[in-house]
Length: 94
Image 1 (cartoon, helix red, strand yellow):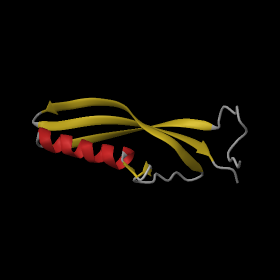
Image 2 (cartoon, helix red, strand yellow):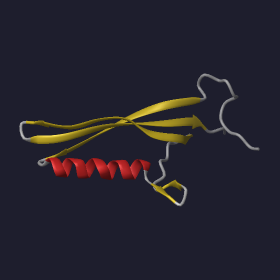
Image 3 (cartoon, one colour):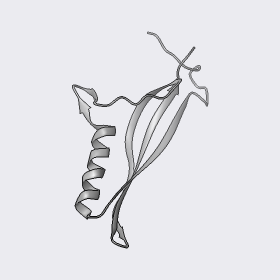
């Protein structure tokens, strides 16, 4: 078995990276459609693995999940949908 990154138990070995995406549109349907596209792009799977790779320099993405979705809101006739995603990353050895 080959491993990379810092020794097991190192506090700096893994990190949770939070990413927020806000889909904004003129109609509720458009905002929901865009939020669905983001969800599919970040979490969609194809043949057992993620459909889209996420590349982080010097790190490997070990996991990803939808952390929070606040739902649809409207302000001054503009609809928005806020989603927060978590990526678990670990550093790669040199």
